[in-house]
Length: 194
Image (cartoon, rainbow, N blue to C red; front, side, top):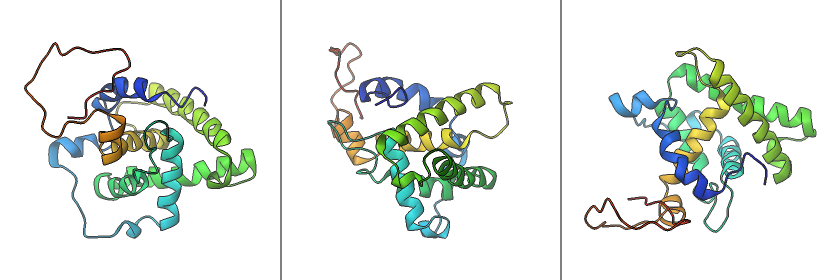
């Protein structure tokens, strides 16, 4: 699958580090929380853009032994989070990023992102992931994040908070037992969602 698409176990091991850091809109989650609007998702995103977000997310987290991001409807989650939780400047970066990603697909493959092959999608997103990492390393502290970082963060956040991600990609126990700090772990075990 390429360097960009990591296996689920590696991803789960790194999820707390990735999401525990500086996530776009993160201050909103901790200080004031997201303000849910009475607007529908289509106030900012069209149905085709939400479908496009699902394809991006599914390229990042494809179906394996557990459902992929598209099955978890991560595109809807991403659209709601951008609309309800992102500041206007970050919303503009995200929306412009959707256009840039499709423009890159057109330039490189002469087709829109949603019509290229899964291998081409992976190749394109792998290059964008390298670009965003370099951008993040060089940017000033208060400068906005790269649009692909926003997409990737929302994909991970949406997936592992979805029913599919929490119950099928992670181990899930609806009513966990007592805390056991030395619970045995076997290499390859899924992380706990609860």
